[in-house]
Length: 338
Image (tube, rainbow, N blue to C red; front, top):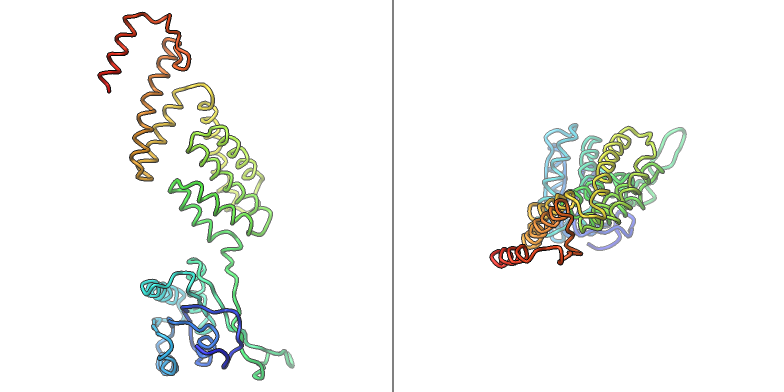
């Protein structure tokens, strides 16, 4: 699209756009400023005719897609239409980073529904700022100044709610390293002391589980202790307090277990190795790694039995105390197993 025109030229541009429309001049402002290749329009039934006629002027430069709301007073309608348009744009090869929402038009429920959908999907948003002057107790549009398209912040990012979901998904897939990176980014961006403590706690939790996953028990204990400190500060916000309390209880249980697997060989080491193998196989599909860990679990089980029943440590076997007959039997069993 050529620059200039009805609106002010800003640095906001996008390959694709979704618009909630009602004013025809707002369409032209968005097209000339954002310069998109494709636009999805959300409109009500009674205005779609004039909207389509206006877009006809730009059909040689822009590809248009339309979605009509059944009721302009229902938030859910525009929310769903946004989802439909975004899915269609993705099928055309446009990623989330290529799309921007301009929710400057439509009814308040239409704007709110589309904005809510964009916020939860991490889509950039803009609004058209109309210059106004306060005259005689009321705001009056200054027609001598052009409209400007201005970026809008996503409040879900500033509170950490948006990326928390991404990190939780990675954490639940046992991808602790990636989850830690996202939690670290969230902890740096959130506002408020309490949320800073909360997301720092989740960061240390992910790092602790990551260390545990590779049998770095000392590192796991250290990071989980830090996580417990961050999550046990006493939150005033009910939702944070409840989640932190649940996580703190889990951490206490985990620290108790880790204290048993750290250092001397124990049956808990065997259990932990079996669970580690299960995660590799069931959660990650890494069958070769999981099989090797199961083999190690069986080996550890017999090592623990030797230590428990006969006080024989495989790291320092006293061969002089083992009879020749027992040595021969052991060698035969190992040979047959191979």
